[in-house]
Length: 63
Image (cartoon, rainbow, N blue to C red; front, top):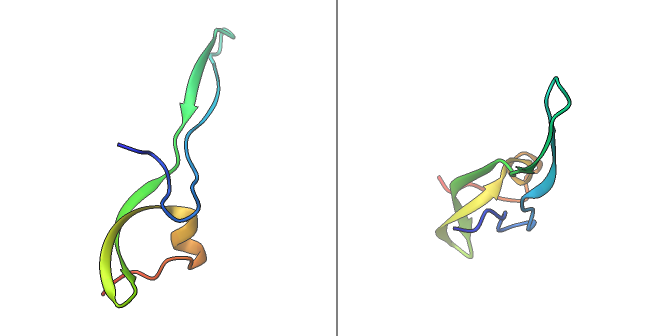
């Protein structure tokens, strides 16, 4: 299953996890995706949308 926002295309990014003992390992930062019902062209559709797009109003939730 894709972990990308269907509106802005934001996906996972990579980085490093550093412990207190400074052991370094690779990790992924996943976007906060929510599956919401969105009104598109007069109909409703389920989309996986990041919370940034929900907050900024790029998506109008269906009633």
